Structures are given as structure tokens and as C-alpha cells.
Amino acid sequence: QVQLVESGGGSVQPGGSLRLSCAASGNIFSGDVMGWYRQGPGNERQLVARISRGGITDYADSVKGRFTISRDNAKNTVYLQMNSLKPEDTAVYYCRLYSPPSNVRNYWGPGTQVTVSS
Image (cartoon, rainbow, N blue to C red; front, side, top):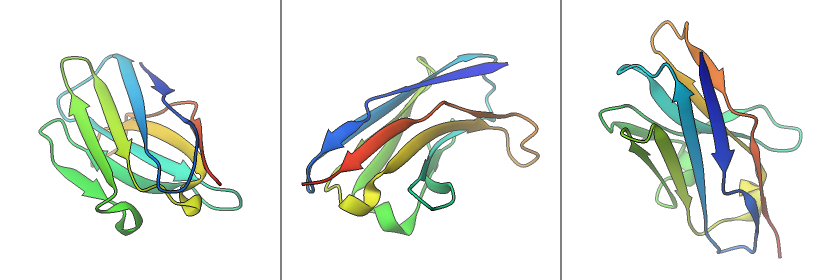
């Protein structure tokens, strides 16, 4: 079993920055991928960024060049540095830990709200 606890959400003006953190506890394995997803009002949950234990990253096109995902394996924590935030980045951001390709292990955090507004 794995527990995920997110922190760092909040409200910011357009152009501002936020840093999200997600700490995982429980049974973490070397093949686990950690990532951030978001769900805006009326939208489906979508991938923002993900990172393997070895540091291989993948980003949604909409956040490339603005967001950076990183991972501290010693702390079982993943971070999402979000710069140049836009109103369309407003969403609930969810942390996910899963085990590709089967995804038999698939855990989600409760989510943290990010609001970008002037």
C-alpha cells in the first residue's frame, strides 16, 4: 500500500510561480513512476508531467518550458516547479504513483488546488 500527500497549492497571479510537492510512503519499488495530473472545471484528468526513478521525464505540450518535474528518491518525494503560470493552468493537481506497464500498482493523492487569476 502507498500513501501520497500533496502540498504547495494555492492562488497566484498570471506569470507567477508555485512549487508542488508529493511525498510517498509505504511500499515504493524501483520501477514506480511518479507524476502530476490535473483536472480543470469541466475537463478530464490529464497528464502534466511524470518522472521515472531514473530521472526520465515526460511533459504535456502545454507546460513544456514552464514546468519542471523532479524527484528525490531518498525522500520518495516528487516536485513540480511551475513558472509563468497562466489562468488555464487553474485546476486540481493530483499526484500519482504507478507501475508501468501493467499499472497493477496505481495510487493517487487527494489533490491540491492551483488557481491562477488576477
